[in-house]
Image (cartoon, rainbow, N blue to C red):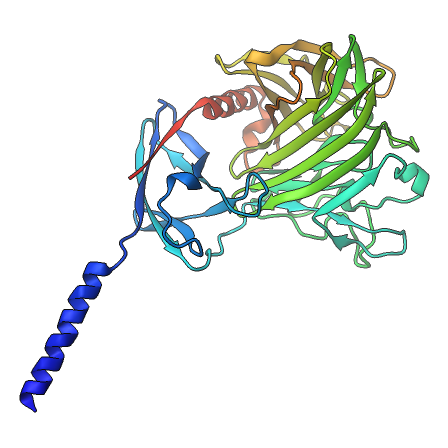
Length: 427
């Protein structure tokens, strides 16, 4: 009996030792190195799935630094139904190296939401607004023709913990700004009332903030048009028009997650200057930055066009500043009481790729696209160009935006952070 017990214990011990030998270690270490001499805050880091050793395709990645988990999300960047990238943001001291531990789990953890995308619509004026993630709009579906507004906040909105934006999807395609006073995501019912009907309630100050930018017939903050044969052409129409110049628009919330949200637009058969163009647009937002990235790709170019990226100039009374940041970026900056009724100070900026920047112009006083400064960018057929839109409101968490020099310095720092490279090594 005693020998049997000893033998059983020995077998269990042997089995435990063997299991330990066969135990799967955490798959990798990921080393991130800030190669710049600048401090980086909420710096986006993208790690390609193809660089990882994956033994079980049903598992999901978890990253930690000094035993503290780092919020991340997995992205399907090519829309094939499979994730192909880890996206995260991280802070770095100058030239700092961080060693992250990569583990694999059966279910992704829930991380605090620091970004969001929102879209709601109704088919008739009597229908309640319901959440949606996509839409197809034809050129005749203008509010002036339908007699009502289909969309919550006139179209989709996107935000992070610092600032929010919205796009007029109803054929106007301008971009507006939501000023945020707090870091939490704004309520889901912004733009609708208790009966789930469309209501302009976002021009009233709430605890979270409000819509602050007067857009008019401009393209807002970061909207765009096209210069064809030296003539400015608007993408879309005005609120008083019954027909758009874009035959068909496809919109989709491509991704919404704790550290990144992505919205995509496909404008088909845009009639401009006697030509027809197709355009793809993607807006991407991540935490920490008072702005977002916008990417535009124009097809069917005739070789005589420039992209015109706008900054609204309705309530601004100060000169536009053109700042050469570094070899990568040019910034166009305005700073004034340029909110509704000139009530608050708002800084706006475009951070533009220097290699395609060809100066700026002012929009005509009359026509379909007015009240704007417009950056002129060189474009090539079906090749994307990316730029960044920055909005700093004096009532935001960073109240020093009331100072013009502080806002300018923030824009310059943000552009330099975009230039900074994080070297990624997978061990």
